[in-house]
Image 1 (cartoon, rainbow, N blue to C red):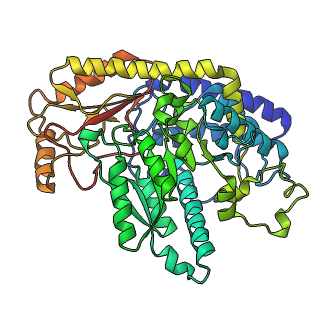
Image 2 (image 1 turned 30 degrees about the horizontal axis):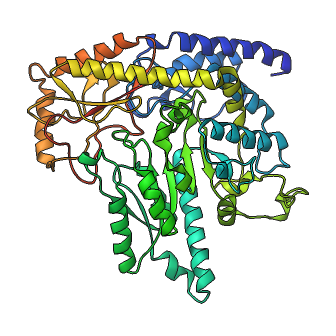
Image 3 (image 1 turned 45 degrees about the horizontal axis):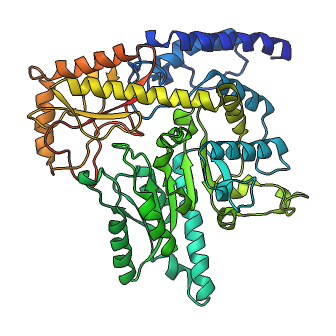
Length: 511
């Protein structure tokens, strides 16, 4: 393919993409295929002679589309939302064309410097403390990670490195293995499973802090303080706490104004995971949800969820960049360059787990310029308004009840069912509507199996109630996507406990 053909094929591909998105609601949102469907549709080996472009494009519909779950369909009801916009897609095209591997400033100065400036732009939209903004006298700055899971792990590894250095500074003879074996980290029992997974990867114990419905599923300061004191008395070394703003099951907000001072006093790294909710903080009316950020060591959210920047773009800020660099810096001769010790440039390879990185800040630059702060705020506000409207529809139906506060775009509701459980096979056509269990009464697997069987038998007045809510969703906004919050499918368990009386909550995310 030469440049002339690329121009022609590129225009054809843009048309294909535009047609796909304009007509996406006509496609079945969930693929009707079985595992392994694709292998029989393509050869066992790569072709020895080149295929034509026309043949490749034909196979998009024949091979690929039958197995695609259409995340941007207005009838997609699963997982977190994923952001997308035409400006972001165009920026990704340019990024792919430039094709730089931006591991250092010298590898592509524009790739590094635009990322630094875009992170400052976004940090100012959020009104982050100056300590987190690179273009100030502070010692921090921002970096684009791939996902919130990655950001959580990076923060945990940096915290572990800092804790070990601090202890060795006061006790140089202490073996490092004797330190790491006693480190203990904390997170809410409502935190995303990636936090626990980060502890597994880092080789440190991760303790879950219990929350209660009466506290709106938020971690309380006194609970954290008590666990820290108990662990210190047992000879352990508390070093890291992951607070969540907008938890996975119910969009709960940990009380970081209480938790932050405790962490600071105990020299515990406080990381804030606001993967979904963080985008809303650009709106002044939602910015108070971030109060307490001044106590944090690191903060992360995903513009690729709710800020029109397509995947992957997970933004992370740190108060002291030296904490990250101290944990990840490797400087072989072949990566060194003339400006790296000047203090004027950033080498992002020291801020992340991988070495290479894409030119992801182009997406932010295009979106921020073409929407403006006001356009992005309007986008967020519209979704919250729609969630509130859907909440009112649920409250008006006596068969349902709201099971958690509706703060942003997440609506948790449940059917008032004597069985107490909706099950994991509730479907609207081929579109899954998925239960997420909040905390409450302990329930046995036998009870759940019996209730699931009852649901499969479709007792009178139950499934029609679910369908009526689905119809309300479609009427609410027929040309926009409605998805369930959060980053997971099927039945969710919290701290080993099942949902309390009434059906398991369904979580619907308006996006």
